Length: 453
Ligand SMILES: Nc1ncnc2c1ncn2[C@@H]1O[C@H](COP(=O)(O)OP(=O)(O)O)[C@@H](O)[C@H]1O
Ligand SMILES: [Mg+2]
Image 1 (spheres, rainbow, N blue to C red):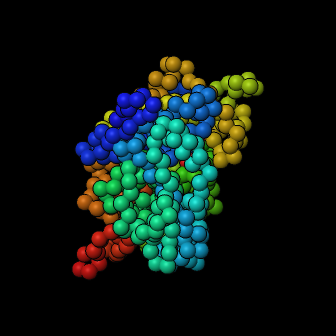
Image 2 (cartoon, protein in one colour; image 1 turned 90 degrees about the vertical axis):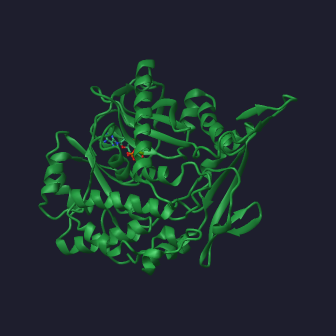
Image 3 (cartoon, rainbow, N blue to C red; image 1 turned 60 degrees about the horizontal axis):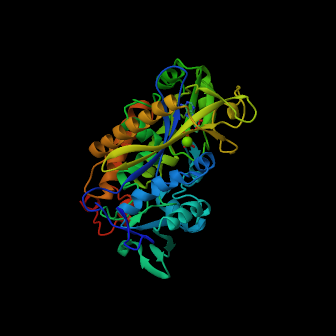
């Protein structure tokens, strides 16, 4: 709670219910509003989606404030942000040595590109806005970096270095560049978003699987398929004219492909989604290793129908543009509340080009307000989807430790890939399931009973 102190000159934050409720969660949803039918969520982003466009639209900082205030309440007035600074060569050593993927082609990306655990080293560019807003609100906003030294992770916290295993952060942790599958914190450290809730925001296949295709476009794993696969043929027989193929982990539209649905069988081999039997056996092994090391979302792709979004008029040119609604949702005491909605217009006027049909990473999207009725519709869709997703997280991604929660995610992914691809991933999982995971290797106090047995 934020209480004004007696002099009225400042404020004091108190941790209202940090002990009894898990940390708040924050989501930013990309939502297609079709001309007919209900809005559909195409992307569930996590706690650190930027709000600069909303700031331009409103001319103030209300969205950032609506996100920071509940975090400060949960953290007793302290927010600790974490970035991982491991330079690329060490990052490579950490991942490549363990993934043992080097040299083989694997899935959606070349295997060599398959490990990028936590984004650009020390990427801090977009930290200035939340930091300034937090300070204006009287929040103690602390930036901490995590580095890889020799053989362990260390935390650099206000001039002091300590082992990640021993670090007990103050306030609430709001990770900036941090993959919780790879760098664990004990489950009792309050993190926004906590590990199980962060998993579907970095794995679109998982999110849509947990939502059982309700409120989202029907989604299947894309590849790996055998040449002439009936599963691929089924995907190509879908009713929509265009199909979206996109990586399981999103990065500002990177790797999102639009293809004519009926031509998918012809195009899929070029996308690295079709392979002969021997290739599939090897890929199954690599996928399971990738899953165990928290890296598999880099290897996986999904397919879903392109749902044509409602067109909107560009406020400056008057031209009609494809538009994607953006809803920001904060969850406190397990109740989702949509704190803002707006819409992005894709950069090019509506047409058949990629830039006229979807948001691309190139930027240049205009941001506009939604009319009241539509805003209400988008709000409802956002809150409903978040509530359903969180309910599924609580029932299906449970575990006494981070390692077990990550294993629960892997179990669901294996089920999904086994049913929707030709990759014998279940056999590989049975062979590898007792292998130590990346998470366990750094989980404080973890003893690998399975590996010992
Ligand atoms: N099923 C879909 N129907 C219509 N447009 C889509 C669909 N999926 C993605 N898009 C478009 O592609 C963009 C990028 O996809 P998204 O899943 O949001 O990836 P990212 O995580 O990289 O942002 C979206 O903002 C939207 O414009
Ligand atoms: Mg998106």
